[in-house]
Length: 200
Image (cartoon, rainbow, N blue to C red; front, side, top):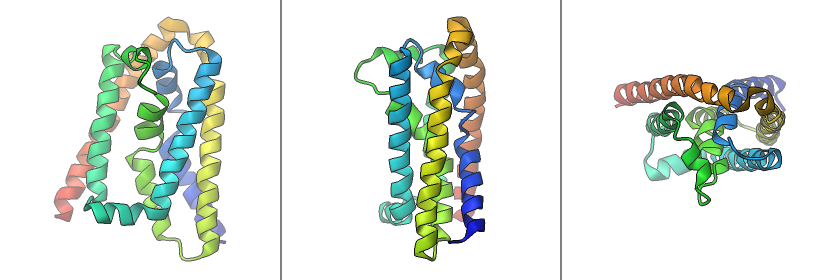
């Protein structure tokens, strides 16, 4: 098992999934939920995100190749999805997600595209392409699980922040991070467009 490979994949995936950066968005989209409900949503989101990343780690390139989808195309689509979420945060319509019983925010937007988004998927695909032994394959699986556990711990403890921020603070965060998320979404989509253009 290549220690350097494990460290690089762990650090990169932690940076891409950004556990701390996802806290404000998590608090906003789960606004109005109780502590236990929020912790349950955090667990569901992390489990789904883990499953998504695991599938792409094992079969990602085959799936994209079969469907004729390139990584830049995945970036553009992910950027558009993030932009929709950002617009909901900016306009105060994130409550629509939690108000509708049929919508599980743990799946969208938490699990994907926020946690297991285009960046995380692309990262997993890149490192999966560098796997040439059973040890590294198992190591990459362990890395994904460990990073998701870190994310779960951060999200579950972030629930206590809502008591300090209250509704006014969370409302302010929704506007500020909605703007930042919109910028990230545009950058992601733009990078995908440029890469797609250069690749073709």
